[in-house]
Length: 293
Image 1 (cartoon, rainbow, N blue to C red):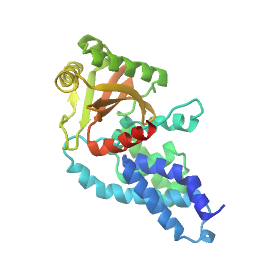
Image 2 (cartoon, rainbow, N blue to C red):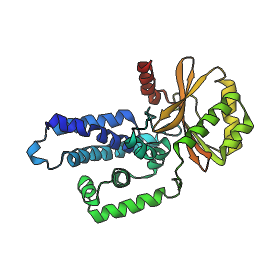
Image 3 (spheres, one colour):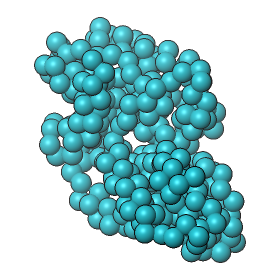
Image 4 (tube, one colour):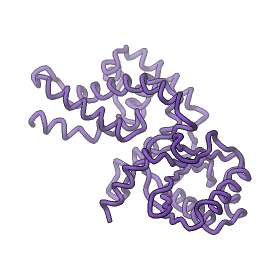
C-alpha cells in the first residue's frame, strides 16, 4: 500500500477524531489536511503503524488548536455550540450507529467541560478504544498518567451524561412530536414533551438574534419557542433530518436555513434543546442540501 493509500484508508478515522475533539467541521478538515502534509514528509521506513502515527499527529494538532481556541470561545458572543453536521443512517451504517452517541451535539457540548488533554484521552480510550500504551505515546504521557487523566475526565462528565441511552426509534418519535406541536403552536403538547428542568441553548455567534444565555424550565422554554414562531417563523418550513447521528430539525425561512435544532432526550422527555443559528455554522449544511437537490 502506497503512502497516499495509507493516508486515505485512515482519513475517515482521523476526521472522526478531529471533529469530536474540535466540534467544527472546518477545523477538523484543516487538522486532517495538516496531518497529510506532515505524513508526506515522513519516511515510511520509520513508521511501524500508519494508523498510530497518523492518529498521533492529528491528536497533537487538535490539542494545540484547542489551547488557542479556548481564548476565542471565552470571547464568543452568547453560547458556543458545535457546528452541526448532516449524517446518513441505514441498516448497514453500523460504525456510525456505534459512534452516534459520541457524535451528538449534546455530547460534543459536554466535552467542552474537559481540558484538551482530558478530551484527547477520553475520546481515544472510551470512544476509539486505543490502549493506554498507545495513548501515552500519542500525547507524551505515561500509561499510568493516562489512566488518571481518564478518571478525572469521567468525574467531570459523570453528572452530564444520561445513564440510559435512548433508542433511535424513540428519539425520532419524540423529535417528530416536538416538530408537530411547535408547528401547530400547541403549548400543552409541547409541555408534555419537555422535562420540567429542560434547558434551551441557542448559538447565534453575535451575528443573528439568539438567546445570549441558556433558558431553563419547561414553561419558559415552551412559551419562548411559540413566541419566536409567532413573531418570526409563522411561514417557515421545517423538516426532520439526520444531524450528528441523531434525528434533528432543519428550519427554513425565506428559502434559507434559519436554524438547526437537536435534542437530548432522557426518560422519554426532552432534557436539552440545542439550536444553532450562527450562519457560519450552517453554511456547509446549506451547501450539502443544495447539492442533493
